[in-house]
Image (tube, rainbow, N blue to C red; front, side, top):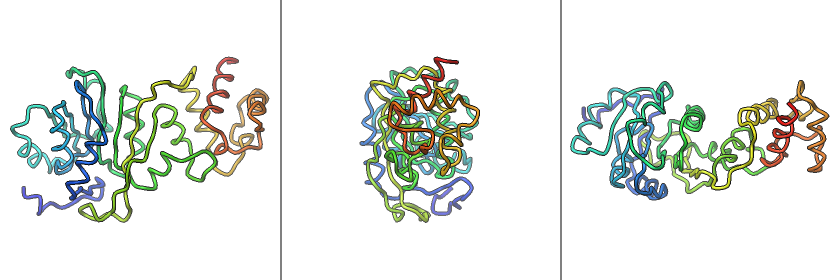
Amino acid sequence: MELKEFQYKKSFGQNFIKEASIVTKIRDTAEVLPHSLIIEIGPGAGSLTEKLVETGEQVLAYEIDLRLKEVLEEKFANCSSIDFIFDDFLMRDLAKDIKPYSFERIYVVANLPYYITTPILEKIIQEVDVYRMVIMVQKEVADRFTAKVGTKDYNSLTIFLNSRFDVKKEFLVSRNCFVPKPHVDSAVVSFTKKQVPYSIHNWSHFEKLVRDSFRFKRKTLRNNLIGYPLEKIEKVLKSYDHDLSTRAEALTIEEFVSISNELEKEA
């Protein structure tokens, strides 16, 4: 199949990068160390994939669109360091897929489909111990990933990601760098596993607390956390000069950690 004849599918969020300098910059930003496994989601026509192969490390790429199977297999026919899985990444058993490989750390480097960015990140975090991710996402989503406490973009996803990783917006990418051209600009964001992690006693409890705290954006913690032991929560809040009339976006990760650990201790 000639790629110039390719019919892009909106349902797959297909926007292929046409600027070689951008994919090189993404690859270089990843700073892949030796003895690593690189996971790519949505290789498309393989422009970023080619740069990842140049690292000399093992690459495992997931592509949902079977129409690209011929294109990718032909392009990488002579490359032994890459494997493709032509399936829906969200439906895969990631831990099982990577079991045959020998590696010291996992990287995720990808131009993610915008409409399923969050489910993909949640799956990766839940299923494997990833060392570093460098992903391209919609600029507005990147703003949420890197939002500061107290701002309108600060939300539960901000906290989930920043509690595990050092998150950095690396550079912006114009919509003009894609085929077909999307309606929005993009940004490349890096996520590096924290060397000194937060001391969270129970991750599932912490994540539920954060999610519930942001359930209704404009409501206070008192209203969002109905059913929780509010007296214990307020005791922790007061130690940070807050109270139950505070909204979730005013709390730092450290403050959520303290509340979660206190409730877990008393459970």
